[in-house]
Each structure stands twice: as structure tokens, then as C-alpha cells.
Length: 109
Image 1: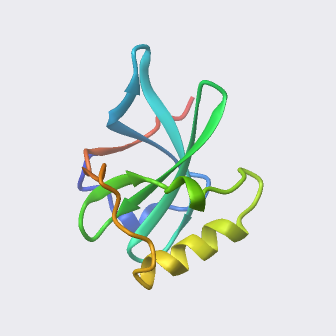
Image 2: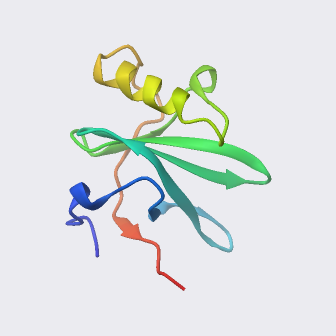
């Protein structure tokens, strides 16, 4: 699939690949943590560090979760709170918001 991916099919636990989110050895796998009608929060790990990504389906951009808003991989409460704040406009758009590259579901092994 490509950018025509039906975003209504994205559910928590789904794995995604983004063309522009990669290391020298290949794409970084991200996992959908939670989602709303407009936003998807994804988790990924680089160098042993947990990272989080906000995908805005309306503006077709992706950006890192602000450091002060990051939560632990085990907790889903922070993710739901972040989604509420995003929907209410209480989280500023990052200076590094990038156009949403093609979203590709990770191949199942």
C-alpha cells in the first residue's frame, strides 16, 4: 500500500514504515500507539531510546512529540492526554514538522 492507505484501518499495535524515517541499515519500524480521527501517535526506538511521533492526517505532516510531552512505552494515559491536547490545539506545531511521506504498512513476517 502507499499514501492511499485507508487511515481508518490504522489501529493501536499496527506497524508502519515511513520512507523518510530511516537509518543507514533501512527504515525504522514504528508502532501505532493510539489514534484519533485526525492524529496518530507512533512509537519507535533508536539507539535504545524510546521516541514518539505525531502524524497529522489532516495536514499530512509528521513531527516528533515535544520532549516535555513524551511518556513511557508502558503507559497509554499520556497518549490519550496528548491526543486530547492535540485535538484542542494545546500542543504547538513543531518547527521540524515534515510533509507526510508515504506510509507503508510493515511487512508481516
